[in-house]
Length: 304
Image (tube, rainbow, N blue to C red; front, top):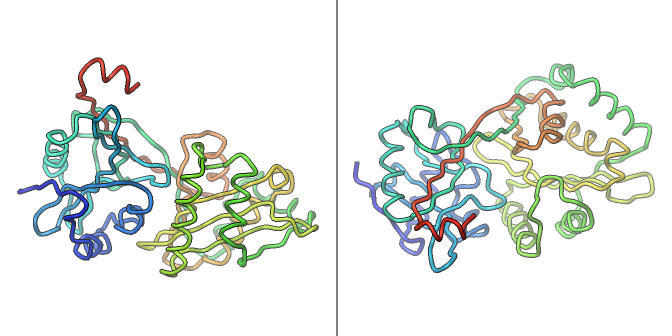
């Protein structure tokens, strides 16, 4: 298999996005427009674009290295054809020739277990929405059912008319539930993603208001490849006390049940969030971060 490294400006975006759209393991993170918003990136490809691997890159101490950016959960190699261990090894070998430091989270469809590489396990939770709502909600945990009753008692209301500014303000005013590295740069990227997704009709904002008409919980969902990712969950202290987050997710499940769709909660390795997602009957899936560090020893110390 012939593999070539290409800088971003030489990538054929039309061919790239066509491959992502047809890939059995494709996801929204790998589309060119999404990558352009989130990071600087290059790629390794086959000349016919049958197999492609995006490489988000940063520079530190004049050395370029690959990483997994905030707002991206899973990347790796994408194709409509099988990605064998031999193909994976070839891509990693090509990447090592270009970058001395590599740290990328590969999507769950790529089996890395048989390769002798440095890898760490990550967890995500997904809920299949193909069943009807009654069957799905029967599998809710006792705690989730209790919080849904609490939300009803608190007279919370759902709105699908919230703005980008409202959800980002809620993120900034309160500890971000899912994003631990919140800053102005990430807030701006979130705004661009929501805006672009709205134009492409693949994004949805949902908010929960208290009885005084205050926005206390909001989420942004983005859909691709029969999967909806809960990319943003913005919460307030009141939302935790009133069951607002439970009401929001239950509403999404109710509206999208009986569809050929999977709700991806996008995580989490954080135990409290994992319990929250699992409480809706979501199943746990593993995916892996592949990492190597061939930097000079002194740079390795600085990189840590």
